[in-house]
Amino acid sequence: MALAADLCDIGAHRTRRIETGRPMNDVTPAPALTQREVLLHALYEASELEHNLMCTYLYAAASLKDGEREGLRAEEAAAVRRWRQVLMGVAIEEMGHLAAVWNITSALGGAPRIGRSNFPLDPGLLPASVVVKLAP
Image: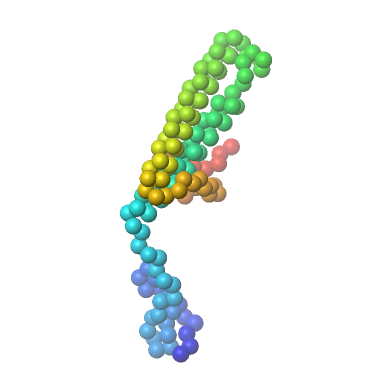
C-alpha cells in the first residue's frame, strides 16, 4: 500500500494517512523523561549559568585599570583594588557553586559538561526575570 502525500496532526504526533484513510504514525514519540534525566538537565543548565557568571566576574575584574600606572590617582587606585577584590571574591564563590553542581551531577551518574548555545539563549529553567543576550 502506498502512502498518500497528505500529512495531518493528530495529538502531539505528525502522521501520514494511508490510502484507506487511517492515520499511521510517521514519527516515533520520544521516550518519557525520568526524574533523574530531568534533574540532570536542570543541573547542566545550572552549571552553564554558574560558568557564565564566573567568566563574567573574572572578565570584569581583569578589565579594571591597574592602579597609578594607568593614570589613576591614589584614592582611585585604592577603590579599583577594592572593586577587583570584591569581583574576584564573587568569581571564587561561583567556582564553588560550579563545583557543587558538578559533584551532584557526578553523584547522580552524570558527567560534568559545559555547552554553549548561540545568543539569545533560550530561558529554559532560568527564572523569568533572567535574560541572557548580547548587549552593546
